[in-house]
Image 1 (spheres, rainbow, N blue to C red):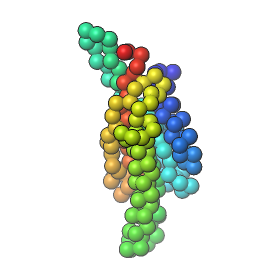
Image 2: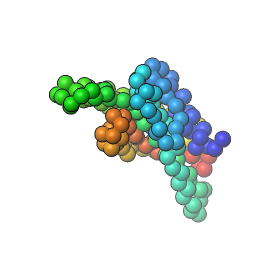
Image 3: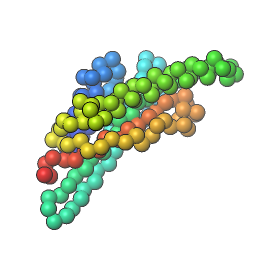
Image 4: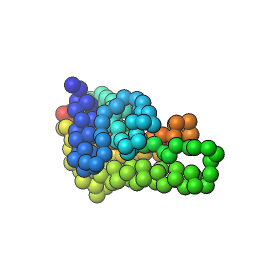
Length: 156
């Protein structure tokens, strides 16, 4: 297993512990069907990228881990109505709230912002995809991603 995989798995363990009512799993591409998401949103974690800086001193390895919230909006039956739009907004607000909770773990005063995971030091967080409008429009599936940037402590 790579060091990046160990970091991904450590993030999964932390999220599983803190959000025990949700399914947290590793993924490469978010291939979820509506049927898979009917029991509730899933939290998906993957290795996003690896960057190696080579200089006169020790090499610096940075690893980016993406954490996604994936959920399904209510199915449309018949014409779009204001009631259906309200149901979509309510469902997406729940997914966005879950993402906000996850972001809070790595925010400046969050419990995971100052601790190391799998011998990696946390550097920063960014929200790379607020939500994927095409996936939401075509499939009714909410997908939101954040990126957690870590530095491998083995290099220090």
